[in-house]
Image (cartoon, rainbow, N blue to C red; front, side):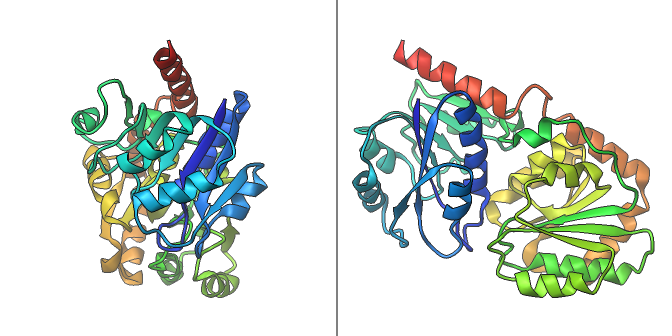
Length: 345
């Protein structure tokens, strides 16, 4: 099976779309698929990361204009036909996909906005919302298979391995690959304000984090903090941590399958509904939006929740119950293959 991914990363977009596509690409590759990526080469792109995992990158112009122009640019790069096109991009939907059908037999869309018309055979929305499937009922073709909810979360293989033991007083800080608002620095300053001898922290940032130098300087002077850049062992860090302070998005599901309690800051509007619902269920604590955060507020929240072990245990157990152990990426791959076979049949 030949698969083409159309997705982007940038300082503004973050790295989440590309990273979850890489997770799916690795899983499909293990089933014998050949995968390629079409990406815009803009500031903060992850083309080198994609290539380092063994996949070809078809470069697109760095400026997005319209779906039609993007489709034209994509088609100009293609030298073969594909069995499956996977689109993970908020700016692309039906217009783009219709133009790519001449080269792509089947199309899958990864989305969570449910705010436009889609021309796809399979749609994946891994977020947890009431009536998640019904949100797309008027937006996709009648034959489209909709995978909705965190049981379809795209999680790397490391998250299915045996968990490392928790480390008492260990905090994990992670605000996504780019962290445009520099919440990481606020979190580091907050932990320093606590002045607690039994607290240590892992700080995770992406390779394209624009605040890398500042964060490195902050952590260098604090012996109980360890900086991890573009790490490929996030599951280990989550399994060891007692509490996570970070952003929403895909990290919700990594945290949930790791049974890790979380204090969550939403860094984009599309993260708010799911984060609020998880807070309502008791699977995390939604601290609010990025613009409202301060180091003092972070310090207060960390101090309170670290002093509530029973509450953290309950939060972790609730989070873990949202993703069945046998679900996730393997279920997504099986569903894709079965859906495409049924369509062909």
